[in-house]
Image (cartoon, rainbow, N blue to C red):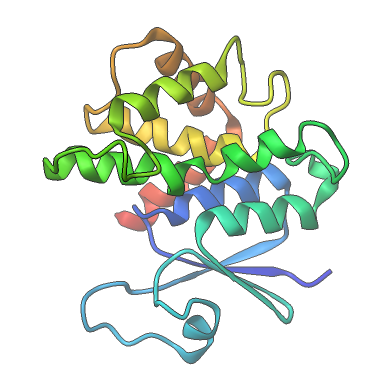
Length: 202
């Protein structure tokens, strides 16, 4: 199987994709992208990421942009890692729902909160920040992971967001969420991804 190339920059959403690749035991290489304003970007990178954003993945003839899509692709391309329930598994729907909860609910709710915008629960699919948090807490239930005992690619997306909120003082003081963040931080693949991120950031 061809090596995967991850177009990446430290201290960005690309760290999620590195974490997932490490969890999957993937054969991959990092290609750093300068995401500064006005920086030139290679044709190969723009071919994988039409919006010029990281992360993006190239795997042979396949290109995938967006961290949630990359997590889904890698988990299904490397099924032996057990990071996604297979098609036909009754947990499949729940997995897909939570895999995209970060871009569909967490990030819009966080953006709304940080910008001070007036919430509009009737108009916005994510409701508002408190609703997003409440739904996430109910989804985690007894844990330890979003699918119960099985860690999955959905936890990479959710866990990275919960840790991010805690880093910036936006995570409400709920023990279940902080415990979930701690479990994510304790995973060796997460630690390795963050070490690579920190070393690259200098």
